[in-house]
Length: 181
Ligand SMILES: Cc1cc2nc3c(=O)[nH]c(=O)nc-3n(C[C@H](O)[C@H](O)[C@H](O)COP(=O)(O)O)c2cc1C
Image 1 (cartoon, helix red, strand yellow):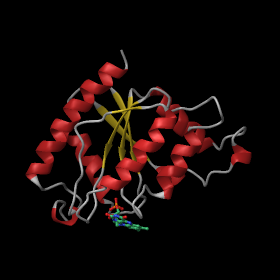
Image 2 (cartoon, rainbow, N blue to C red; image 1 turned 90 degrees about the vertical axis):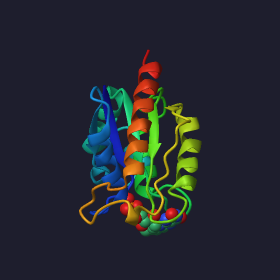
Image 3 (cartoon, helix red, strand yellow; image 1 turned 135 degrees about the horizontal axis):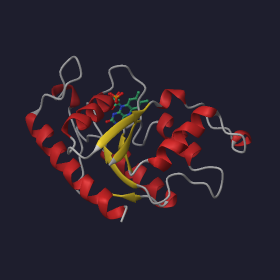
């Protein structure tokens, strides 16, 4: 099973990137998660959508060839980061060539705050409605107080979160199989 992992943070020490890397380690053995670096994606410009930048073409191809997409999103001002929305917008275009269509998607997220990206995840689900993706409703995962749950070198050290993430990924594997039938 090919899963494309997307992190909505370009920050070197990103908790969300660390969470996605932990997911790679904890995923069921048939699930292979490859991370796509959003740093390569330029700001969206609708004038360019009939002649897409190479990095966007590559991004769209990776999405299309994946069985599912796993998003690790930070929460910025109660929503998703612009970097992530920008990438989502590119891959939804040009009109009629929405690469997200019918993809089996799941969301994970980590924040140093108490809500653990709950509001960002809700905002992302709203966008997914229009993109016509199959976003797993439950289980949900919100990693709050992230600074206590990762080591200085980005390892997930909280055993409860690790167990939960592992179970989450088992459910996501089942969801992806169902949505790709
Ligand atoms: C522009 C900006 C807005 C933020 N807004 C929120 C917010 O609404 N809720 C929240 O929990 N954290 C917020 N934060 C803090 C982020 O959760 C924190 O920087 C987190 O580490 C970002 O994820 P990352 O570690 O993957 O880069 C904000 C951070 C930035 C830079």
